[in-house]
Length: 283
Image 1: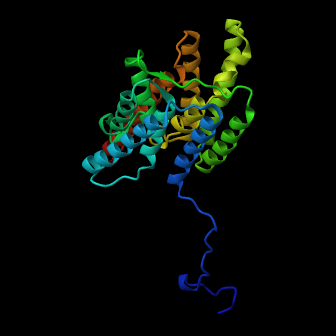
Image 2: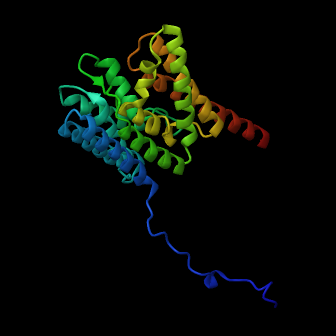
Image 3: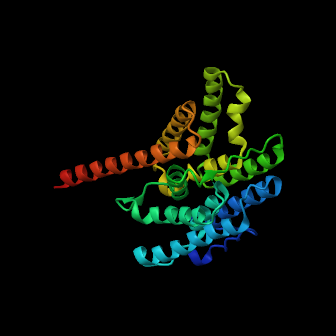
């Protein structure tokens, strides 16, 4: 046998070199959201208090472990629950402690209670925060701080977020939303006569960093096709603009709360129709 045709068995293959630095994808998002917290709090003091944030995190992780064991019969990785808990800790504003625990609990429980065909259709933290803002408006508010004229914190978050979200192959979702938000911001400025700077300013805040890098890109609660994801996130931006024109304060949360599950339900319905058609053909 000539060298050109000689085959190499698996045992003869040279060992693949391991990268010097490797990071499980499950740890990327928690590390990044912790970075947002540290940059935002050290720069602007965005946290209501450390104990309240810790309460939200502990509640989320504890419930995730318990409910995962009960419903799925296994111990789940706490990364997702950590993201939900820290999001609640950053975004919720209340003088009391109970809204942090309750919001975290609602967020995690929604994953197990509000399911269709085995899929939960709301982003957990978006669901919990939206419910609290709507039902407990007298006690609960949401973070609304912008980075102001300090561009460095925003640039740090945007660079890290872009690299991480690109690694997870979901940058198109964030990119479409940001482009749509900016376009609609100028449109709102033209329609209302308000300065364009005031319409663009919200996207420079830590609330929007969590929204664009975590809530709208959540793999568990977005449709599967790339084209569908782009359409859905554009519709979220459209509805947000409409809500803003009607003076709805928490427009992005409510827009995702409405559009995201609607898109998921449509996808589940279409999948069901395809399955029924395939079964009919097979029969």
